[in-house]
Length: 186
Length: 446
Image 1: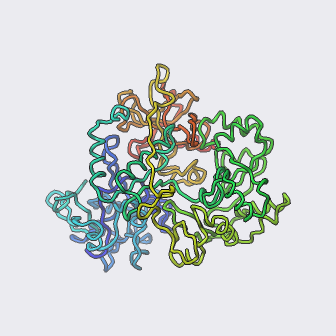
Image 2 (image 1 turned 90 degrees about the vertical axis):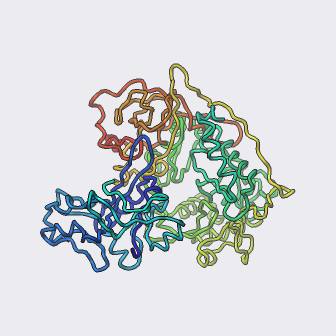
Image 3 (image 1 turned 120 degrees about the vertical axis):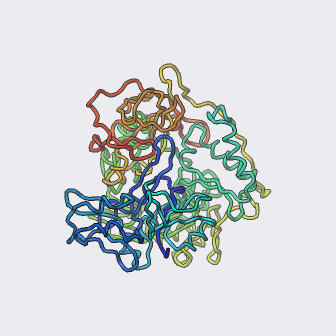
């Protein structure tokens, strides 16, 4: 884990600031790439933001299954959105992603997904969602910076889906005492 | 206390113990605590607890309201002069009259609050009104009274950067600039004076609020009292007018704010670094330097539930919309996020998530839709007004003393469901406990 996104669901208050900020991006204006789930509406205010986790091992499933080679994984491990000039809107990536991140715009027949604000992170800026999150449920930085911000925080970058494990470029912050891998499909 | 609040006393203890044990605590609240019949008492209670536990005037500790600062120190409140000076204090009046170059006798005395003003308007005691960037026809409680007040005006001018519901009924609308279209200093919620820079040119004929006021003064024959050509010249006057007051801005300049990223008032001299933490070292404003507790007494709400109105209605806010929504209701993403008001009621009342309901209070009928968040039986929650004909705040109780309204608690009943097919069905729950219903009547605003 280098400098990356850390998602801490325990801090998320479901305010949708990340969604609003993501929606402002010029490359997908009006569309938010963040999935914000309310866990048990009516019984808890708990919420969970999901961004692209940028799978590392095995190589991002979305890119592996793309028949048009539209999904580029850059040298720094960021899984890009499907290139518009290549994407054929087949939806394979949507089905392959274990986290449910890519979505298909059926009218455009194009895939959309979080690309870690590559225009920003490639020049040292934090992704928009992390800059607006009022509780730092979405935190951008290194493990060391996370540790300095919240001592004892446990970051997990391995998820288990059945018998398969996926190592990701982004990580989640686990509750106290929990050691990975994180259960996938949450 | 537990009985009044409907809480298990152990819950109160669970919050009190960590507070009592902590070396450093900070208490903060917003409008939810303030806009009650007992809002003043609520706030004083927070201050009392902070004082009793020694959490004032120390690093990492303190008390603050998140609802902002600025206007009070600058003298915009109708009972204040610049620098938090008192408009009824003869020395304060004489000083500020001297700064402004007017006869002290020409300086008005204490004015009235907006709630009193609408009643004065209805009685013909206020016949002309210049409103700036407020939207009382959505935001004030007890709308029938507010509407009657505005309708009785002989002349109403309103300035705003979007045509609000209130501006739409004015005789003259002055298009003003948004915050990114002008520069100047503002005071944020922590008392830090910061600088806004102009990011874009104003569209069309829009003018800044200060240009509007200066031009009005010129046409009224008082242009020599408003000779300002820039926000810095206005700041220079405020610096002198507030000098020596509790909120002393004299030492605050553009240069200092730009060099430091912000200066906390009071800042009495040019070489003063500002005061990030008031009451440092336990010195308070009372002559003996000590703080005072303010005892509070609980009183029941003005309108307890009865047979005709068996539920309690409390109000809240929604994150997607700001104040009356005059800005945020124009943004499709935010409208989609929260298209209309809703009520949240206990499931035992028999409503399903998304059911359209008609809400009736003693003030009238409203048409939000319900949610089913975990509120106690006999309790309904409705967000503060989002504008439009059927979504206004109708409760208004006055209390003696500081002017705060009881928009918080009122009687409510949910007598029937709106007929099937009259309201579109909700698409999906979007916020915890909320029910998002497509904005069928968004277009009705204004």
